[in-house]
Length: 331
Image (cartoon, rainbow, N blue to C red; front, side, top):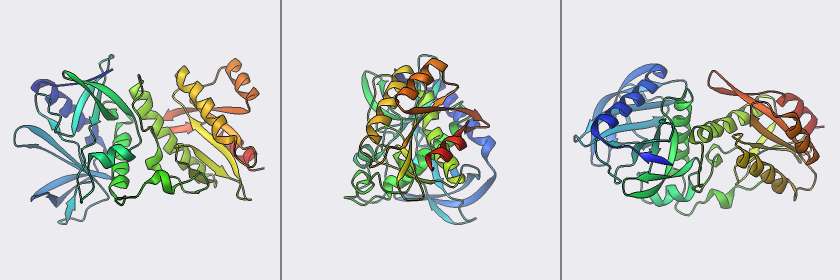
């Protein structure tokens, strides 16, 4: 189980790791006016052009590190407001502050968020908890346990993308109307791919948090690659990816897993259940990290499931044999 970190020197070290993880992606510094409830400050924000986010860090009132993040390149001298603040207490635990650092049993440090978001009326923790999909975890939080969102491992090469994805998901949630529920308005026959559908909505018993954070990016990369290949790509309310053939029928259903035995079995079950009610049988594709063992592959084929591997190259998931599977599914 993850454990929330405290102690002034420990948090200072983690905050420095966070800044070091972000700085290599900075492409510009821009002078802006950052608006906050009841105040605004003039500051130079860091713009990371690749992931498309800006950020600003400072110490606030001596009791927390203020880490503000936003989307899109601001105009020089313009006014901006952050999409999300992942503020972290500087010393002792403070559950009123939205962010924190947490450590797993292997000593890896993760940035987490408690779901405290702000904005217009109706935007708050309850809206976040109702709609956010990603990597949820129960953590040891001082003398209690709390459910939090795990954004990513700070020292992972994938961290900047995981952070940017989190900011985009929060932006989508804040854009919802008071009674707007994406579960109710997005169905399996909707041909849009929804990034905010990637991930889970519950707290599992135990996870490899680094692998789960990486999985969410692999789902996004898979959708992008399918679109580049000319496929009509959509995602359903369960976060699954599907493609359609020229006649408009669902031609393939994809499930990305981490490779853990339990996750592999659940992925197989999800593929079978999600395709059984379709008017025509689609191609079922299980996407796994690394090569699938021959015996395992043969077993999957007996269930009508095709396995393809993915690997990481320069922070992007690459899928071997995807072109072949997409071509056959559209025949």
